[in-house]
Image (tube, rainbow, N blue to C red):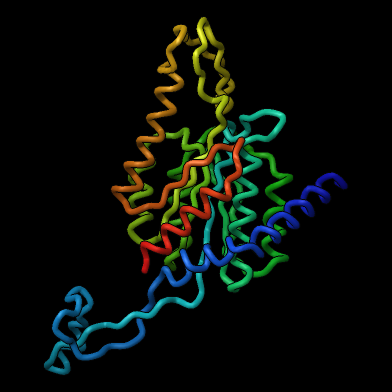
Length: 290
């Protein structure tokens, strides 16, 4: 228990330091006001978007009126956190799940300066944990504390189930971060459905040891989700093994989803510092919104 408390404290100190840096400003600029809510109607002017015409008011007033929206003052940020067996891949320097929890903590702490809401779903092939959106350091640290001592019930993966739970519980427009290695299938329709209403950012985590390079011979591959061991044949001098092809296919799929459904996409190597890529993405997003 003492070691867990020390780990929680170290993580909190690190998150405070990062959020107190320029990163918090990048986050606020990139995401604040991403949702819109109805404010009032006014007379239609030439050039206004006809999609926002209020036909009920226009009929009553015998003239065209248009709906005016304002940016929401309060942001709801939500994380879907993959805790399936494959997230426990790594080495002595860290597992994918370690970075996943750290990223969740960072995003949670980013909501504090603006008093935004933070919620999280941890999922495997079922919803393992659900935390409804909340405010405040104490509640966010409570979420992180539970994640650090949590052990999933199952080891499989089903992102569709997590997205369905999110869609059914979050009626208000939110910013949704999906943190996963995306070793799953058939999740694009669910992402498309959620992205139609919410702001979705995909964060893919990978460990470089997941890809075999220039290795020859018969290689045992342990599936951390099913527990089964498979054997593949890797030819000398060729990196296009079955594992490498599957790895690249995930990258291609996520890039296609990102462009097709207007989702953000960040690809992170767990052996590297994640801050430069996050800051770069937030900065580009801010410039795009201007």
